[in-house]
Each structure stands twice: as structure tokens, then as C-alpha cells.
Length: 459
Ligand code: NDP
Ligand code: 2IT
Image (cartoon, rainbow, N blue to C red; front, top):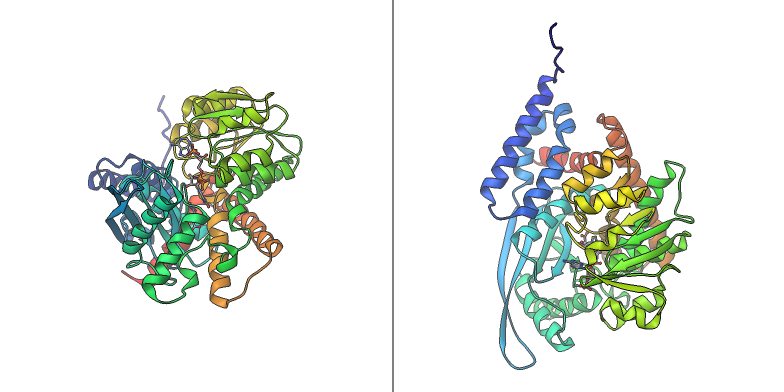
């Protein structure tokens, strides 16, 4: 008896071949950049349905152009420490794609920062920014500078030196950096002060995440964490579920994590655990956010201090083990690849219902496959954490028009944007033949907008 072979449409075959060819060339042309390869692979594989439907993208070489940054800047950052010694760090800015607006994306200060990390972040930013529906292109920057244990004066001297070089490459209509890991309002303030001095002009829209008293937007600090929870709320709602009464675990205890916890609590969830890079805390009564904010945001201490103030809570070393705690909803909000296959298996075995990626690329490709195979609701980073950059774009809009909106006005716009991103992702997943797969829906929805703009603007 003849075996009936599954027939693959020739256009799908052509799209798959094209994607494989681009992936191979990315690996060859960018050796030793595993995070960049991972981000490109995860994204491009999910674009096959879009390339099948619109093969003109292949003729226009859209993928080859998307994976090659328009500009990569790498520079020396010399600074003097409190002992008078000269230190040298490496700075980066990757201006990835400007099809739909000026480059936009954060700056990360962390010892792990290298070309691979900045490129994966810049690449993902293209799609994320497009999803927000705002006119912003994709970029990212950073330095291998470690802010831990540095004095305020050291932070200021380093940051000023970083901006001395960066200032040559940015501007309100060119490239607009913001914060990321290790860069919050304090660092943005020092960068803005230095940029202003070098330019001799008050160009408020050159950076976002500024203090609200000098051009920053209210609700920018809260935006990424709140936005992640708004997105997950929509994903749950579509299945008749909500945060009310759910047990939530959130990794990290930085900007994104803290405000994700705050919004989840507001919506009636119990957040029982969170972490920093040393370990995690478990408080079965629910994390006391007032105490946590004081420890991590104000005093910049280690998370284990929490148990001094809450003796009935527990502290465990090894932050990765946070995923062994049973929960209904897990929000990875710390860093890339913090949730691997083993962690995903533990979460699934403990009955997790939904994952919302507050961090960038926190789940490995294996972990995402496990969630999909077990029908766990999965909110991918490019959609779920887009609230931060969306409010950054609202900050740019306020700066251009020299007005400022109230916290409630910005928060309401953020909420609408997150609902819209969810709807776009759900619709694209359905339209391109993968209903319910938000990874595919998100990537395609973000891609189409940028790809069409690239086609219209020519080579
Ligand atoms: P913060 O610097 O405010 O906080 C980072 C948190 O993650 C800290 O608790 C930190 O622990 C922990 N962490 C950092 N690196 C590691 C690591 N290698 N292993 C374990 N834990 C780690 O950063 P953000 O909250 O701003 O950023 C968190 C994530 O969210 C990142 O992936 C970032 O790219 C992403 N993101 C941020 C946005 C923003 O607006 N800030 C917008 C969209 C995404 P410790 O205190 O010990 O360093
Ligand atoms: O990853 C991100 O989207 C950010 N760090 C925020 C970028 C921004 O420009 O606000």
C-alpha cells in the first residue's frame, strides 16, 4: 500500500528554504553570538506563514536586511574610580532598523553585556516597537560596566563618559535610548545632564525614562510591569480566567518585577515569591511590596534582607530554583534564558496555567516548546513587555508637544495599547493558520508593519 505523504505547498517550501538560508548566514557571519542566533531563530521560524502568503518579502530581501543592523557602534568608556584609578569599559549602541521611526530601545549596564546580548535585544526591539503601533524603530545599547557596589559619584562619572561618546550618535529624531537592566532614572538623569551640556540645547526627547520634573512621563516607571500584567490579563480573559485568587511567582526584583507584582496584587492575585541574582524569597502570606521596594529600589540591598523584616518568610540561594514553586501564573521578569527546559517541566508538573514574559527572551526555545505542548497560555516577551517602550513613545510625544499628561491618562493609554497588542497577536495567529500561538501571532504582526515600510521605502 502506498504511503500517503503530507504535501507541503511549494510556496511554504520556498519560505522555509529562505528562512534556513538566512539563519545559516546569520550563524556564519556572527560567530560566537549565541543569544543573537537564538533570538533570530525563534523569530524567523515563526515568520514562515507570512513569507508564504507574501513571497514578495523574499524578493525584496527583507530578512537579510532585518538581521543585519543598520549601524553598530562600539566604543571605549574610560572613567576614574573613587581611588583615582583609571578604569575602562566597553560601550555599545546597535541601531538595528529605522523603517518606521527613529531607533528606540534601552541601555543595559551589566557585566554580561557584549555584542551578542546587545544585538539580540536590538533585533527583538524592532518587532516589539512595531507592535505598539507607534512610530519607533529598533535599537539597543549598553556596557559591561557593573553598577553593583559603585558609589553614586562613580556611577555619575562612568555614565557621563558613556554619554560623551554616545551623544555623537543619538538625537530626538535619530535614536532615543532609555533604561534597561542596571539603568534607571538616576542613570538617565546623569546621561541627560551630560548630553545637554555637550549639545548646548535642551532636547528633552533624546532620552526617555527621565524624571517627571524635567520631561519624563508619569507612569513610565510602572509601565513595563503593569503592561505585562495587562497583557496576561487579556490572555486569561480570553479563556474565562483572571488574576483574582491566583498564586503568582515573579522572578527578579527590579523595575519590571516590582511593578508586575504591584499590578498582579491589585488584580487580586497572591504573589508568593520573587528573586534577585543571588537567590529567591518565598512568603506564603504574599510578598510585602513596601518592604521589597525599600530593600531593592531605595537601599539597593540584596533580597535576603527581606527575611529580617518578615521572619516567617524563607530565603533560598540559587535564583533559578524559583520555578520549582507551585503557581498558577509565572512571570519571568529578570533576564534572558532564566527559564530553561527543566524549569518549564517543573512549572508544568505543578500545574501552571499561564506564563507572561516581562523580561527579554527569558524562556529558552525548549521551554517555550514545552509550554506550547502542554497548552500552557504563553505571552511572549515582544508583546508582553512592550508597555515600557510604548510609554517611552508617549514620553516622546509629550516632549514634542511640550505638555504632560496625568498618571491616569498615561496608564489608560498603556492599558489600551496592551489590549490592542493582544488583539493584533491573536488575530495574526488566526489569520496565518496557527490560532492560539501568540509567539507566531506576535512575530508576524510586528514583522508585517516593518516589512511593508521597508518595501515602500526601497533599498
Ligand atoms: P533591573 O536592573 O531593574 O532589575 C533586574 C532584576 O533581574 C534584578 O532583580 C536582578 O538581580 C535580576 N537579574 C539581572 N541579571 C540577572 C541574572 N543574570 N541572573 C539572575 N537575575 C538577574 O532591570 P529591569 O527590571 O529593567 O529589567 C528586567 C528585564 O526586563 C530585562 O530582561 C530587561 O531587558 C527587560 N525589560 C525592561 C524594560 C524596562 O522598561 N526596564 C522594558 C522591557 C523589558 P540583582 O538585583 O541581583 O542584579
Ligand atoms: O526592552 C525594552 O523594551 C526596554 N528596555 C525599554 C526601551 C525603551 O526605549 O523604553
